[in-house]
Length: 69
Image: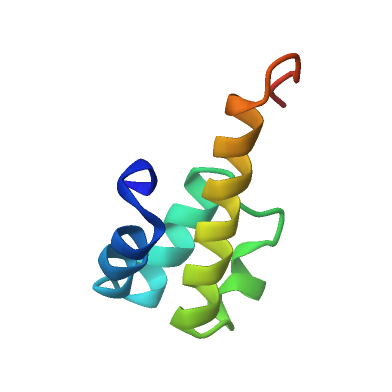
C-alpha cells in the first residue's frame, strides 16, 4: 500500500483500531518498542510510527549496496 502513496496507507490505517495498529507495528518489526508501551499510544501516534517504519524499510530496500537488517 505504501508504494501507492503514504496518504492511502494513512487512510487505511486510520480505519483500524489501536490494538490492530499495535499488532501491525510489532508483527512487521516496524518498531523496537514493546507492546505495553505501544498500547499506551494514541492511534494517531501508532499510525505515524507505522508509516515511518514502512518508509524506512522501503528506503533500505531501494538503496543500492546497503544490507537489509
